[in-house]
Amino acid sequence: CIVRLQVQSVDKPLYRGTFHCFQSIIRQESMFGLYKGIGSPMMGLTFINAIVFGVQGNTMRMLSEDTPMNQFLAGAAAGAIQCVICCPMELAKTRMQMQGTGEKKSSSRKVYKNSLDCLARIYQRQGLRGVNRGMVTTLIRETPGFGVYFLAYDLLTRSLGCEPEDPYMIPKLLFAGGMSGIASWLSTYPVDVIKSRLQADGVGGNYQYSSIMDCTRKSIQREGWRVFTRGLTSTLLRAFPVNATTFATVTLFLLYVRPDDGPKDCEAAPGPHHAPLQQQVQPSSL
Image (cartoon, rainbow, N blue to C red; front, side, top):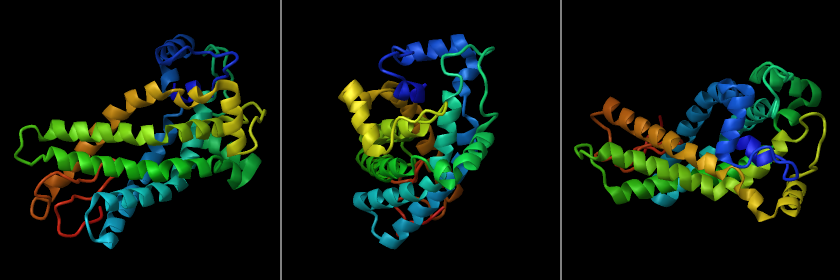
């Protein structure tokens, strides 16, 4: 739904907003239409999280001092490196989600069978350059985005001061994680719009944009500055529960599997994207 709202034509829009988009997809493509492209993130997220956890933890170890600024720097480094997997994964997801847009399920023609088939076909036609389409915009989004993500979580957990014996520890972790996800998306969402448009460009064989600047310029000319908020409601509705759950789960897991040298409080446990537990003398990598 997010991708379709971001890339739909302003002259002939298919969807009036988030909820109309949901209704239209279900009516035209059934409930399964909401899960188009799910194979790509399911395959890639395991590797992405492994990279992010490892890079963030080891970067914190090298920085040695556990401060909010170092959390930001470590998160930014992790965000940049995981783009190697994130970019092709999101390209496949975007192309799969755009497939059959506005068509009835019975009449839609499938260009791609699944996410792997999508990447294979793109590679056959365009090589590695095609598979990595949108890499620069992904880097521009993910590097500061992950930095803000870790920084926000660190500041929130420090200010909330949750302790393992605190009866409200889990609600505090959920709140901090959810708000960190929202802060991260708000800081980079305009770039995400451009990334989605570049990765969706060429579907059907018609290319509209020659570069990032060309895409940005044409988008603003046609739709004004509001173009950078397309799909934002859907993104934020998803961001809070996803990141709240991930941060709390990772923090609690590490708290209970490392009882001897684990944190004295939950102030900087690695979150979904994922800082090391902060009350250790020296940050450790997962």
